[in-house]
Image (tube, rainbow, N blue to C red; front, side, top):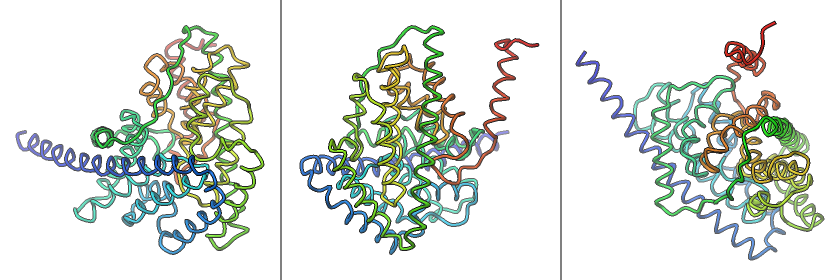
Length: 422
């Protein structure tokens, strides 16, 4: 018995140190990235003429990956692939290449996000540890999920959501808690490391909370359907752009070059330039001002063309943009406050697109407060079931179909007598 406790103590000490190290690496990487991204965005805002060089920037990003980054151009999909079928260590170059590519994309006005970049950096840096330490495949899996969650936590500023994100994103329909302890440590260490380094984080408006009544929940459920359909449309559109681009241009660098030309023309034609870069001012505006259906539609189109053509950056912020502006628009037809619908759209569209409803519902409580939790949980799950099994991240394994999950929910409801028996 004494030997068993000693063995457990050694194991926990080992993984506490390793998880803490993953958190420190992810937090430092995220802090550097967020700082550079803020500088790039501010500089582009002050010099809007930079957007005319977006095609050239796209060509240089494509050429860089063609010459040096073919082994890591799979991005988050490569991380998921290595989790399910571990073969080779993810090359270290993933971190600097995706950081540089994302900063350049935003400097010249590409419509992209940032959190996906942080996830890739966190996981790729964590995966370097097995090159120095002898580790089994299962131990390497622990580092991958801890690194992915730590990057997510540091970039968004939501450590509880980050704790579960790496575990939830790896497979659809079944949440395994095999690395919960390690993910918790890595996520919180990354969050505080990033915070201590003074990395800039976005602060979102407060949510005006309604009463918890049936009418409100029914309206939120209807909104969840719309959020799920929006996520599904974005996924399919991005995939279509990627497929068409690969069919038209076998030489990779041509794809972002051509997309850059199209984006510049479309941005100029649209005229407002509100869909370039992250679009954070529009997201914040959506919490207090009724939006139009054009905002989520145009942002989805611009982002699908950007990401699907080879520019770098995550999908999180664009999906947040789509969700919050769609929620703002839905407030014109549903009896729910603008801020609440914007907030649940903020988390639901990404949660549905990434197949991570639990993490995103938790994220809602971290960002907007615990009172939003019942609405966020409902909306995230409804949106999740209306998305299908195809998500923004490739190589997600379906551990349990959504149809089977619905059946389990129905059985659980019957056991609690929430659904009457015939």
